[in-house]
Length: 49
Image (cartoon, rainbow, N blue to C red; front, side):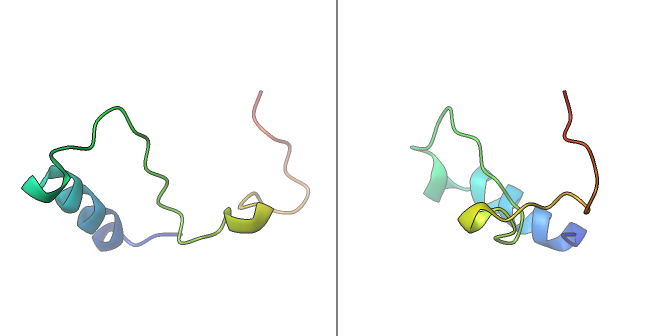
């Protein structure tokens, strides 16, 4: 689980002038949990519908 400060850093970066050319994108902030097909859902949890 991300700490609020980790999410805030991403929000600040996206709001900066350095990201002004980036539009219409989703940014996944999960610390790499979903990289390589790993699931962040607890074992035995049903996926959302």
